[in-house]
Length: 232
Image 1 (cartoon, rainbow, N blue to C red):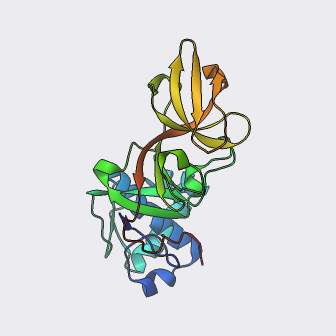
Image 2 (cartoon, rainbow, N blue to C red):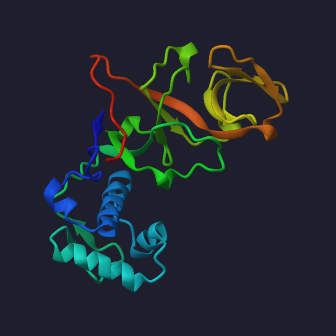
Image 3 (tube, helix red, strand yellow):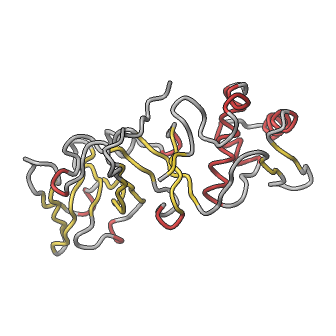
């Protein structure tokens, strides 16, 4: 699993000195365009860029793109809605950029995938569905499954209707998000906590606040240092 950023630089494979010289918003727009292209294989439209950064004027977005073009990061075709080509950056479409968080959110309602400050590049076949994200495991998060602190847990969006017996989920039962093994139990659902010392719960599906389903795990096996997600 390769990182698409460094801990002190933005999440793109561009020369650090050039990227570092960009003002904050320009750098963020360029990062967004790179991550969007890697995830979708086509560029975001001007309106999509504006929506992501809360810019209502398409003219203002276009001006930011022109500045990036003037600095050699983009090549523009104003006649096309997505007429932008990113220059000098590795855009390997065999990988997908997955948002990564250093801890699971407190509640489902406060979780915003666009708040991720770090992305990891993984093989597209292993990156999950659109909307998937990675959470770094804390102590005991999934200890009963042998998951260790610092492992990277891949979570995909899911609905109750998509869950089958044995699925590992991240959900909030009213005490914050935790990890459970899901088992169908007639009209109800049985949730087995995967943290030591916690009890099994029997719930009605409508009461389950579901963050997503765990679909993968990434771990370094060489006892190397963990990926540092602290922003400097």
